[in-house]
Length: 470
Image 1 (cartoon, one colour):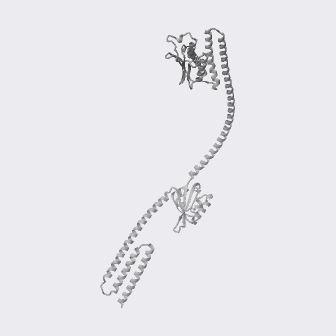
Image 2: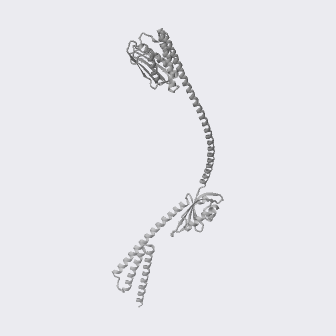
Image 3: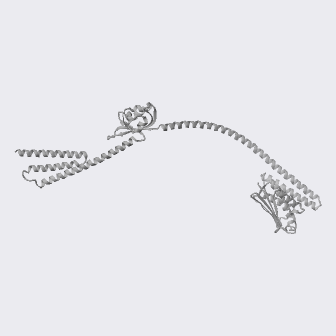
């Protein structure tokens, strides 16, 4: 019975141990959410069954079922050990990575360009980085023993710590402000403050991260900018006042100049009227002279004297035409020479009694304008040459054409007087002839510092070229 009793006890103990191991394995599975504990629980279950068969089999050798149970148990134990070792190796790798990550995080925290500190719910400083200490002039050891109230200027303490309390309660997601911090030596430094919560697993704030950035250089620059802005505004006000005074003076000067210009305009208008009147009177006086010469020519019976008086009339009338064109055109400086030549040719044809159906005058002098100084002698030259053509060029002929061409090129004026009459004989030396008309033409050309050339092909052609800078 002792042996039987021992068997019963061993079986009971084995079953109890196996049940306990199975319970632990199931509990472990639910705790770690991995199947590793179950391998050992199943293995001990198989070992317990095989042990039960071994104890209750008496002297009979173990059968195939025993060996299958034992082999399955060992296989499950091996699988469990492999899974356990794999979890251990993986955990070691994770811990190694975690240590490296913590080192990098610590290095980043310590070498950050801004000051960082951790504030616990009780208001104590838990951790600071190197930049935080540099900004406030403390060592790491000293600053951990200092209350945060002593690091902030009194005027900024109330808002700052009220914000910390609200962040700790979860009422405020964060806080940003510009404050004055007190350094260890008692001096103050302007900083930009950022406070943000660090939340735990329950999503409740565990502590606060306080970030400080030294903005004293920016504040100095802002103060300097404000000072310069103030000076600039003062200077702008001064310049505005100066400009207002200058503007008033300018307005007064403009008014004076306007009055002066109006007076000058009126004076100029009076002078223009006067000059027009002078030209008109000169033209009238010359016309009176022409009339007197005409009356004189009617009283003489000498044909040579009559011809001379007629030539004098045409010459004086050519000058009178200049003054007539001046006061009729409204431009007291320049003569429209195309219009002048047309009037001159028409007057001469009337004076010499030319039949216009037989002899015609063609004028080409568009856009040719000359001043009075040039117009008078040039007009007399045209008068002599046209008169000469009308008197001698078409004798014995039924008709013909006189062509007058005037043009301006650069600094020269060219006047061409051409007729298709019988022409001047080759043997006639017109430049040395005893002719008042030709002598007058040569004298006037020299007066104008020009040149004159005679062409005898298909009639007569005089080409006069004079310099002109107008």
